[in-house]
Amino acid sequence: MIQTQERPRLVLNPFLIYIGLALIAALLQWLVPLPFLPRPAARLAGAALMVVNFLFGLPALRLMFRAGTSPNPGRPATALILAGPYRFTRNPMYIGLTLIYAGLVTFLQLPWGVLFLPLVVWLITVWVIRPEEQYLESRFGSEYLQYKQSVRRWL
Image 1: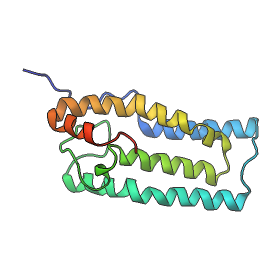
Image 2 (image 1 turned 30 degrees about the horizontal axis):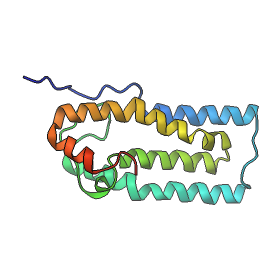
Image 3 (image 1 turned 180 degrees about the vertical axis):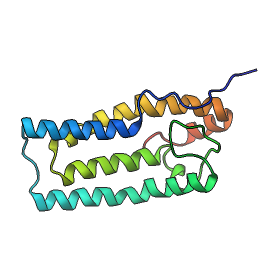
Image 4 (image 1 turned 60 degrees about the vertical axis):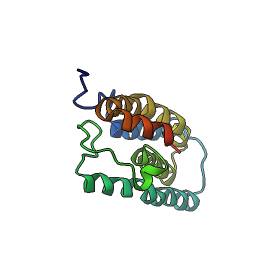
């Protein structure tokens, strides 16, 4: 009998990654200021990025609640969601959170935070998404493997 994991074994909570890197960006901007967009342009661009989150993050969250499964990545999954934004990406909520992060650091004129975007994506992929994928393979087997082959991780 194959033993399945009870829940994903994340290295770090994704919110800590986003918040931690935003705080480091703020500290670096204070210590080693970098030039950035003028305030009105930064505010507009940042707000626009955060609004785009509504295309990915919120519909995905609504589908999770409707399916009766927890959006908390540290909790067990009770359903595999394949509809809505999950047809285009396996991680619409992380895309949404990354858009919020990018929008916030832009809005607050933190160019260090923008420079950290590749690091954010890499850490979320390695410390959160890959452990989630292992868990989902264990939990849902061939159904998840088939989904994984047909839908990209990010976009």
